[in-house]
Length: 114
Image 1 (tube, rainbow, N blue to C red):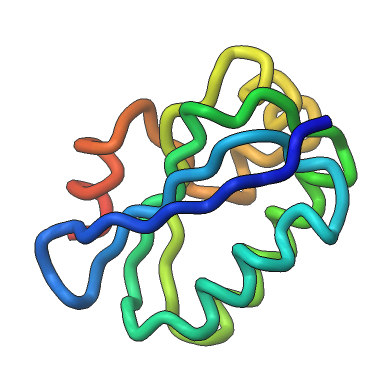
Image 2: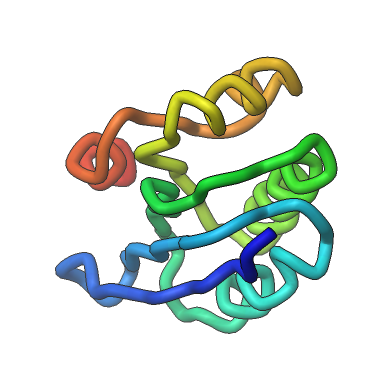
């Protein structure tokens, strides 16, 4: 599996950022840098763009659930967008569509964040 790459873009206000992910999410190590980025960021609202995530397994999905929970505890809101059909299927199977805020595209994610 490929290493998870992370890049950050400005979302127009200091309180919002767009985090773009590329690669695979299959272990806790996959999301370690993402967790560090989210907790250290001063932004409170974050879009997690997954258009370039090519693989997520059940362990990776569980790590994203935990990441979302920890972000909420810190007063941060995550909205996941642009899941491929394959990734969406794993999220659906694991109950992630009920646990995470998931929208179709970046514009919808930004609108949801207000």
